[in-house]
Length: 397
Image (cartoon, rainbow, N blue to C red; front, side, top):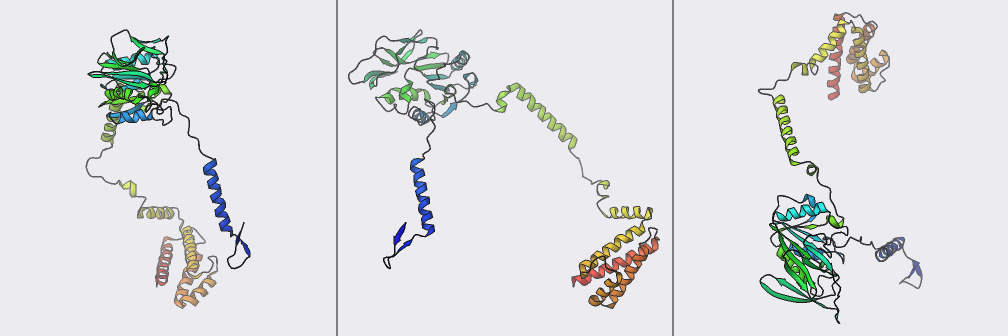
């Protein structure tokens, strides 16, 4: 790539930095338009799915009128038994249907004063509200189909929907309240069950994101959703769509067992508190500090004196003196006495050299044997201590 020079007709190559920047821009642009991450394909009728076959729009509308909206991801046998006035909304459960144990559990849950809202094309398993296949299919020229909405205390409202996808109608063995009807029978009905109600709607497709705003679907199903959800807690069933969650650790064990464990834990903590509590002032035992102060040094000294190891101690002191001299004057610790004396004389004077010579000669004469009299040992140690003190004062100046 070349560019024209404004000063003349001569061409100059681009700078490496400009070429690199252009390459990066082209790479990012190609990645943006050619490599696009595909959104995961989720199962149909999920309340949190924004796909065309999801029901997120209906779930958000329910959130606007309900006290609380949650997803139910566990079997219906674990529905909260202490709740009354709650609503369980199941939208087209999986093809496998509802397990009989779960059906019995949800019926008992409804009987205590809760409500079941079931959107399902063929709810054969629900006693008293069986489905029956139709022999006749609707035929209209424009594809529209009239459905009447019946609501207690209000006149019937008719809306034109698309051609029904279900060939079933509700024929209850017990008296029920019709909510949606057409020329062939009942599309939605509600009936009491104990203290609660069971509402079944045969058109779950009307709740999908791509159809809820078409052909009057919203006008037909919204009064049903609002009438059951307003002012209540709503659980939207996702368990029968394959969405599950494991219960917590405390949910695995029964309540009576957790109560027993809690009481045992409190009793154990009380026992520990009684056993470990100190009443009155706290005193540090003498044996805790006897080996942490001057008594340690006295104990070690007494052991050396009892074993008559004064010579060994003097050799250790001689090594310490030589190390201090090496740090102070820079002469190796293994140097002879004469080398040390000459070095100290040249730097610190005749008096310091004479004192060092006396100390080193005394240590050399006494450290040859372990049986050194205590008097001579104490005299030599005292001179060493005085000399080291003078050395430290001189160094601090």
